[in-house]
Each structure stands twice: as C-alpha cells, then as structure tokens.
Length: 124
Image (cartoon, rainbow, N blue to C red):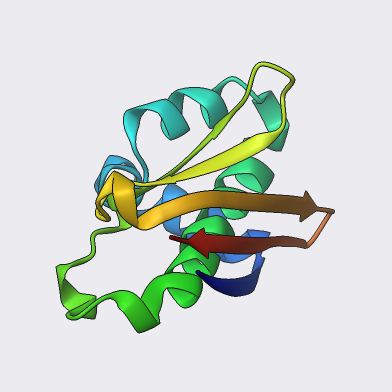
C-alpha cells in the first residue's frame, strides 16, 4: 500500500482571465461537463470554483505522477471533481484503473484571490 499527496494553489484571476479570453476553448480543454455545470451554477463565485477544480487537477497529478509512466498521456479531463451527497468535494482519477486506487481524499478552499487543493491518494 502506498500513500501519496499533492497540493496546489492558484490565483483565481488567472483562471478568470483564461475563461474570459479563451471561453469555451479553455473550458472544454480543462473541465468535464459535470465540472462546468457545477461552476456555472455558482453565479459570481463561479471563477473561485473553477480555480478550485483546477487546483484539484494539479494536486492529483502531483500525487499520482510517480505511478504514471507517461505524463503526456494524461488529459486535464481525466481528473474530475464532483461533490458527494453531503456537498463534500471528491475527485475521480479517470485515467487510472479502478483497482489501482483505494481512496482519494480531497480538501478545497478558496478566498478572494486564491484557491487551494490538497489531495491524498491511497493506492492498493
């Protein structure tokens, strides 16, 4: 059994600028349909939620990079952040076989300027 962690922090303004300047091209390259739907329902706070999900993707990549043979084979959309029935964030690693990962713990926080994500992956 192996435990790996990853953390990422991002400026919300960077994600907002990318979305405003590149629009759907950026959104559909980085985020899944579920992530886009979730963030778009957050009104004025949508950029904070997009940034937090971006940070999760980066943190997951850092946590699993040791077990991935070719980092260029991973797509941004291979990592998806949703919420469980209680509203807690959860991440799925779509590019890894289900039998490789025992559990993923995700913590997200955001404020006016920054979003941060911490991920712990427990491998079988």
